[in-house]
Length: 282
Length: 263
Ligand SMILES: Nc1ncnc2c1ncn2[C@@H]1O[C@H](COP(=O)(O)OP(=O)(O)O)[C@@H](O)[C@H]1O
Ligand SMILES: [Mg+2]
Image 1 (spheres, chains in turn green, purple):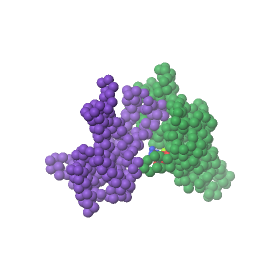
Image 2 (tube, each protein chain N blue to C red; image 1 turned 45 degrees about the vertical axis):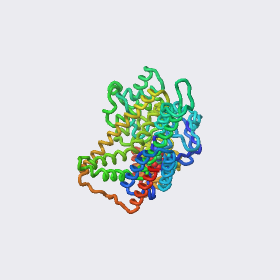
Image 3 (tube, each protein chain N blue to C red; image 1 turned 60 degrees about the vertical axis):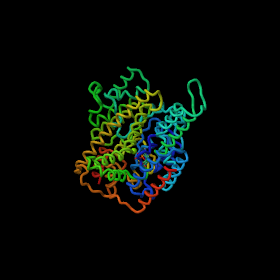
Image 4 (cartoon, rainbow over the protein chains, first blue to last red; image 1 turned 135 degrees about the vertical axis):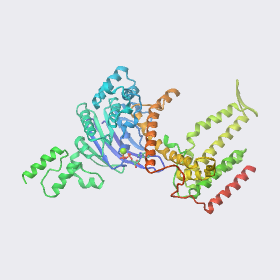
């Protein structure tokens, strides 16, 4: 098992003492693409920070690759190399003078040699779609928001993690940026066999990419299933103030009005084919 | 870790300490600080400590929370203590080794200074813990306003303080987030020697400053688009108002302070 959470609860120690997570049990294996959805404040960000020991839970145990990372002596640096975490608005963490140096920050901390670092930087810049020669010497602060985000994601990819966790990586991106991001995640998952954990508010994204969907509500996991099962529970999702992918919502509405369609479709092309088919036989 | 810093933090409670007028609280704090420096016995400090305890209990803020605010200054306090213990000479020699010696005068002064710093910090943190930043700066503006005649920009100063206080928690939160993001990339803020540690702060400080400037820009723009033009003639939503128990509190404090100082 790659990541294993056992009876994990977490309370933020401040004057409000928010109970951010309650009795979470969760197993994540290699080769999954997990989508995490939930209302703002439901505990998604807290949950993923447990995966690489940035947050040590108030109670319960977290195991990564079979190693308990909740006890004092565990080597968190090692864990963080395996579990790469891209924070929300990751471009806010850029600090170096050039794009190259910023991406090299992670590998440098791992103590890699110069040429290996160069190799990695070139490789991950290629992955996120930044031309190496064009961008390596530019200041990250003069780039557009979308490009900055690419640099930040590259900075985490440069650690070569087995698991990549992304906290709302598409927030604030334009449609083209979102599409490139989805392509990147698909590539990492399918071609490089990286386990991906994606937090997102965009159900389209989750439906398109994830092999398993976890729904959080008030610090608890309320649904944990494949996308088809999750998105067929329309009532339940609406009660948790979550939406269906827009196109699926349309299929549900059509079905309500008496058109016989398969509602378990999440992409526009599949859905439009289905609607045409249904109208023809109508 | 950064969350432990309570200086400048406000905790809302429904207590008589919170309800006191901000100007009175500032005056009381000032009087007590002056009184604190006139004290020269440990009995006096004991008295002050008991007084602080009473105020904390009245304020309904947990004692633990208030004491936690002392943590960031612990290093300063220990430093003061050691300096005095080893360098202040006089009285009988308690311990000596080659050229190092500890003498009773040093120990006495050391603990004396430490008690004073602790009580001083407790007082001031109680002021901010029980007074909302808005009231606090309003209070300061009132107190400074007689100086406007001499060209002191009291309103602008108080606006600056309001903004600064408002953004301390935001910046701490931001710092916490950036720190975590860099740790996720293998940054290490906790080990190494002093120079390494100072260097390891660069990945934290650069993004923090950039975000502070960005916020400042946004805020300036927002203020300008709402036609802010300095403090002249601005009215307030909540006027500060003296009530009878404000004066009662002030009188009690003056009596106590005088009594303790001349004791
Ligand atoms: N650093 C923090 N300190 C205190 N409370 C926090 C902190 N981060 C999150 N919380 C609280 O924990 C709960 C869960 O937050 P979070 O995990 O960020 O949710 P989500 O990512 O799903 O929006 C919220 O109630 C939030 O206010
Ligand atoms: Mg979040």
